Structures are given as structure tokens and as C-alpha cells.
Length: 88
Image 1 (cartoon, rainbow, N blue to C red):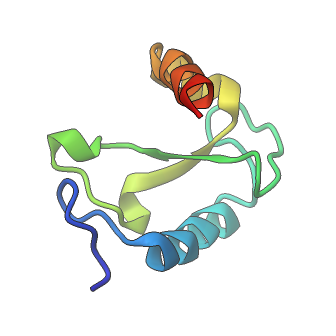
Image 2: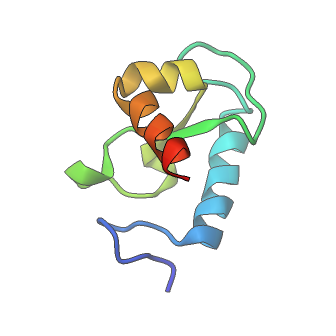
């Protein structure tokens, strides 16, 4: 199956990586908020409509952001990411 069981229409790993590459190519590896160039490994793919609100993993709902702009969209994002790193 292309979709995991978590949340609405959440793609599995391989399908997500393919879609992620399509988003980066469409956005020319640039943050759509500030225009900063981002490498593939440093780019953040942001859901315009969050999955929790019914947003899907599809090209029209995704945009490329740098880490700073992504953190500005999600004030608690850096806290959650830090916790994940600490727990490992």
C-alpha cells in the first residue's frame, strides 16, 4: 500500500521520498517563503493544510521551506525535534 495507517492519506516511505523530490524540483530547491537556496538534505517539506486538519500528502498541499521559515510556521517544531534527538 502507498499509505501508512497514520492520519489521513499519509504516504509510505518510498512514495513520500518520490513526492518530496517532486516538491523540491517544482520549488527549484528554494524556500518558498524567503527564497533561500536549500539542499535536499536540509530542506523542510511543509504541509500547507496540516494533515491533522485533513491535508493530504499531495503536490498541491506541499511547499519547500528552510528550517528558519518552517520553525516560524510551527513555533513548537524545534522543541519537538530536540526532544526526539534527546530520546535517541
